[in-house]
Length: 206
Image (cartoon, rainbow, N blue to C red; front, side):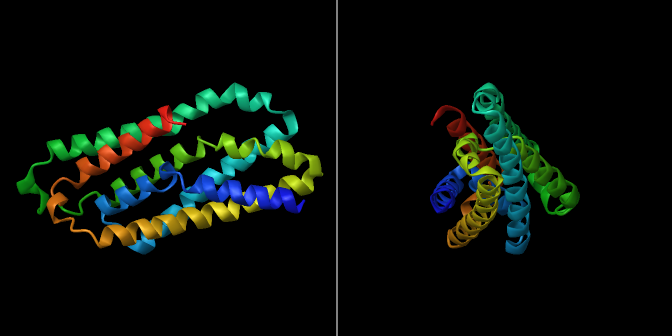
């Protein structure tokens, strides 16, 4: 049991460091001018949604076998990158169409709507992209019965949410030390490019 717990902890922490788990949140937070507290709260919610779907799918894999993973992995692999690309294109298009002289007059208008839409999109992207790599471990955990499954689920849940939140915190702290004046008029384009690059890397680089 301790081997299963330590193995699931290691897998979860390593997997949480993958940029597509936290870099889009950092980039969007900077562009949307979210506070540190807002961003970390959103990260926790997104992380919980992501790991919840991972756990649910993992339990199915553990109970039904790895064939379920192989059957649906191809489809699940495309959902999150597709949403990130769509968000990226929206940011780039918005920045391209935005008239600079209107920016100051309408700053803040629709901000809450934009925030809700962005957060919802990220929630959907992360919920429908369970980590198949982590789910495969449930096949080993099931050897210890439901105790092994519950232990692995708990470790995955806590470690993933904490690691994602910590990485977002570090990312925001790092960005705060950079001189963003050069990019202040093109933050949306920069964010869009980052989102698209992360999606492409997720799709084509193992």
